[in-house]
Image (cartoon, rainbow, N blue to C red; front, side, top):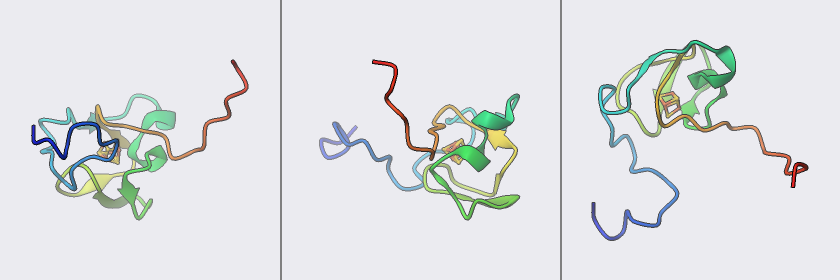
Length: 75
Ligand code: SF4
């Protein structure tokens, strides 16, 4: 990993293959590309800032991150 990548909270643009990201069909729609902040546009089929290739809204990978703002009321 290059120095500029370390400590960055943004992924390298489309730096991952689907295999490396463990891209797969999502078990839970709440944790699918449709709900992930890296998918664009958030339609049935789109792209991902992280993973190369065609991205399906009902799939997911290990890099999933919700695009919904977190409410930090638990602390
Ligand atoms: S879950 Fe993975 S493949 Fe899907 S949009 Fe997010 S980062 Fe991309």
